Length: 516
Image (cartoon, rainbow, N blue to C red; front, side):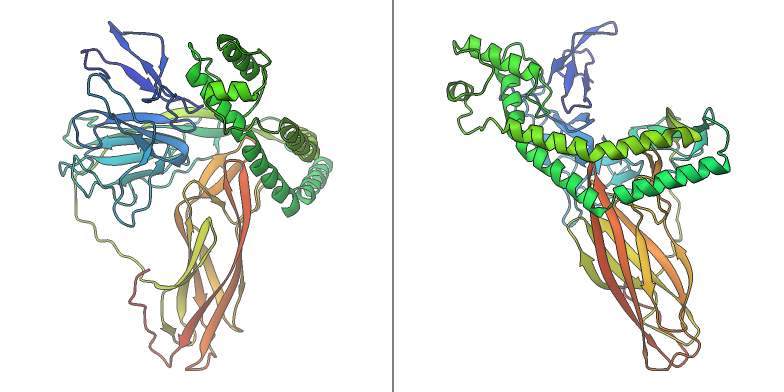
């Protein structure tokens, strides 16, 4: 796109380390050396981990604003406070404008396009775990307000495929481009993704090898218990807090030194940061100690910045290494007993948009029960009937609402995660007929493929009331639900006790008439 209205297309690209780069077009397919995109205060604009960018006129003032999406946090935008030909971006990011109650937008990239053809540009968003959703613009084209997400494509399979096979469904880290690919007047989806595959590394294990593998896995399970994960997470939080001052120093040095040293803002007070600090001290005629003393803080304009406790940081890292070493040693011992390996492939998919047609949607009507909430997960129980007859089949649904950026795991035990467990306590004679989980998003962690869930999911359980249930009594269905909820390297354990009461009628049972 033409960033500066000089008639030549330019390129703006995000990066894995949050920075955004501008490649000015020189014509004839050539581009100038990349330059960091900076805000009005000359600080590098941070778009988030593995960010992607869009330039759109989000506020309807005739210039192009910067919209950033990334793999792990909410999408945001930076207002262009300059002009169309000379962009200048505000230093403070904003959340994308949402309709009341619509929540926020998360995703690995956001395509700004009029998806439904109503003359107002919407957002079509790809995600880290493969979902493709549409946020409809329910405001005006030049003053948008985006609705809650509506899924456009089915959940991806992220299949375990043999090396060289073509997967049947798309994978994760989905990036979307909206274009009329086949010139039929309808907007189609071009989708790039990341897909794992598995391949055989050795013949099947012998009986003795299987026993050895099981013993090592049991030892690993015993080591990586709740106390282990609690301490790991606590140390991660302590390290983030302890390194924050150093991150502030690195940002200040990137902004004040010309040319910028392009320090990685990682909180590590290593040789590159020390050298940059020494350079700043020499330029400002200060002792080049490479340490953040009072005079240096004053020259940087960071009088309130603390140098950070380097000894504390070293202690935390040493303890992290001490905790992880036995587990890493066990993983190394397990390697000879792994019979499969993993590789990754990138694919590009074409999804043709079909002409609009009337669709008869049938929905199971469920009665909502009071919700159980934690900081990351809201659990609500739903029932298909307000009353049932003896021996009648009915359904209870468990609705999980998972906070943005977090995910939980499926019901099957894995090597590197704790499964979601639902343990029911049922009235005598009640039969649990079936449990239906939605299709998970399969994510390759490097060690294994993990079945994950994000956003809102519903687990549907089918019961049969006792044949000898007494009329005018209550069926009390109770369950204990345990889960592990994770975001990046942070994981927490959650638990909830839920209860659903269903009345027993003489014969005719009443379906619920209230929607969740």
